[in-house]
Length: 489
Ligand code: ADP
Image 1 (cartoon, rainbow, N blue to C red):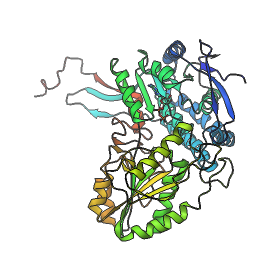
Image 2 (cartoon, protein in one colour; image 1 turned 90 degrees about the vertical axis):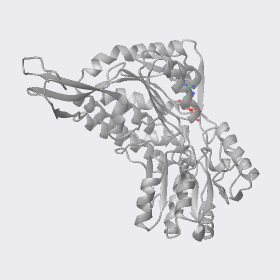
Image 3 (cartoon, helix red, strand yellow; image 1 turned 135 degrees about the vertical axis):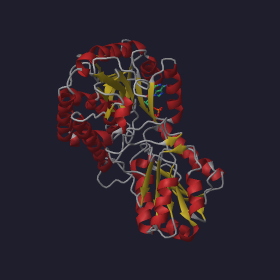
Image 4 (cartoon, rainbow, N blue to C red; image 1 turned 180 degrees about the vertical axis):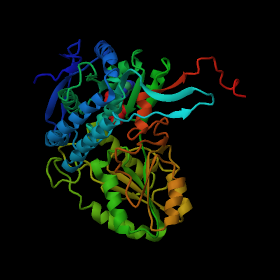
């Protein structure tokens, strides 16, 4: 099989070492493609290419940069079916969700394309006469984007569309489990008219190509989505050069179901949020905190629904749950079933691999879970959820907030007072009322508090803060020296 090359400037090149790795389908093990296993020397070339392209790109008018993103959105739309099918194959999410993943990239590209005619700063009056003041957003330079496999088209778009509209150039190191989708993403960006070198892609492993990108002195901004452990390693490696590091890490998201909730609606929300993408979303609902008054009823209705979910080939329209991404993920998810049983939680359904082919795991529900148990605190990243009974609203909020993560949260209640208290008191970057924990739209900030990140956000206007520096500009047209804080006192 021929090797899909790194795209560096106008060149398509293999790793200098000649090493390669293979991407396979999690559902069947079939090969998807072969890619360069890049190392520092390859990353150095990609960064040099992005650095050389920076001046040309930052001086391109932002509306012109936006026009390329508008074209890119059109091209993505034209390729939506191709990318959707490829995503079911290379990543393994089911077709409806794969289409949603591509749609999110279309939406993000359109949103950021429009930003080309805004990128607003502030103007504000001066305390002195005949003086003008404003702030403008400045691009920073080469952005290192390191992405995971679970949203193989959407997450690159969350990073690249804002980075590009702001005038930065990019080196993308995509996840080693989904390189072909990232490759197609960048090829289509080039098709939209992006100049050579503005976006470069280097394939390879995290500890090799990824680490080289993180440490490269000519990469002042890193945008990383992945595990908490890797996020911490990235932060440490970037510290010596005082890089800007944007992190989007894990979650242990909770849905609260109060005694006044619409139980069928709550079950819909739980099933979608806990088992969509086989639970492999950072916003997945891996905890359900349930008021004791509705605990038995909710268990009954939830298990009945979960047991109807169909495992199968992800490109088959009848499939509800696809495979996990790889053998390590399957082993990790199963190890948490054993941990849960060892901790004394009650296994209601699932708890075992789904078939001998592919990395399937049955949707798993544990009941009688206590907030302090490991299955209720640690990110499992699979189709496992835990039911935690509580006696009051206050206890529910305390349980929800008892984990080290703070990405998404949700409450099902018909009581408007409880809904507003939850909006205020849930420690999370995202709160849903009467909906599950997944379903973010591109024009609001996305990200989390506590161990989920480091204070930055993707999407919406907030993304622009990751990819720009503010410059404050003072224009004195008085013709004389005027001293702020002194001459006007
Ligand atoms: P996951 O558990 O989702 O695979 P990781 O954090 O391991 O999460 O991987 C997310 C991305 O980070 C991938 O592109 C991976 O190659 C990259 N990565 C892993 N380790 C490192 C590292 N030490 N430095 C930079 N990137 C890394």
